[in-house]
Image (cartoon, rainbow, N blue to C red; front, side, top):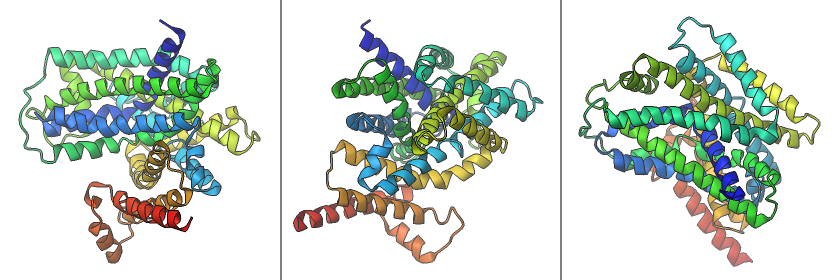
Length: 424
């Protein structure tokens, strides 16, 4: 195997593992249970947004040879710093990293050792996390060569067993709007937001391996991204297929985590808990490593080296550990409105980058419109009830499916682009 092919494959495996967190493990089976025999159509919709959007994020960063900080500079320097810091904090020490630790405790430790306390689990988790993070130059290799193969093996054991010995018949559930619902479910993984943050690790690794020419960086990053999304697509499809086998044998009100646990128990018995526990722990750990490293690098750069990478990593780990003690449910409740406000900003700037839009005024106006709509769309979730705002949001097309920001942003872009063009 050529060196470039081998390097791209290892980086791609690492990207797969960093994307594949605990949420990615529980969403597809639950969706499969809902749609039943329509799982193929559902799979296409889920993969389109759950896999396609992260790939666009990686490609956008590869195109400019940078990260979200560079992508968002067209809106303004202050905006770029605030937006990037907000995203880093949201999918880093405030939400996503603590959630990986809490999920590891609830799905990996508790089912096997019911009375084991949470505090030592969290401490051990972040000690292991730091052991990988404190050597940034080897993060990708360690994840790609060591952790990802183990994670993939555990997932494939579960999936292959489900193909060989189905746990139930695949039936028609009568679920409506299969494709659109699956698109939204894939969108809610929020992996596209993580992709523009993980890009910094990938670009650093690509350059460290000797690929310094712009065309080589774009090529290596793009191939790595494709390897990652192929892996994600295969695993998502397999997990959704397993979920579709449970439509007629498990109650409709079963929770997402409980569904995964029950599927694995029926497929593999007692040892299934051990395999699932290891898979969840590895999925969470690889995501946490990538997020901690990205956040540490960002804040080192933001503070111009006054706070070192290692110090940032330690601070982030301590803060994350404290928040993780609150448990998964409380963290998720806090995460929803924050992510729904930030996600449209990422997506609109990624699209503009890929389309090579050069009109900065149009980009700026469209981005602020997306931000404004996203904020007021979350008023109810934040406990702010204003009838006029509710009526306005309900009037916007796609608002009922979580995309209220799309049409206003497109209209704002067209008008501002034509106006600026005419003026110039």
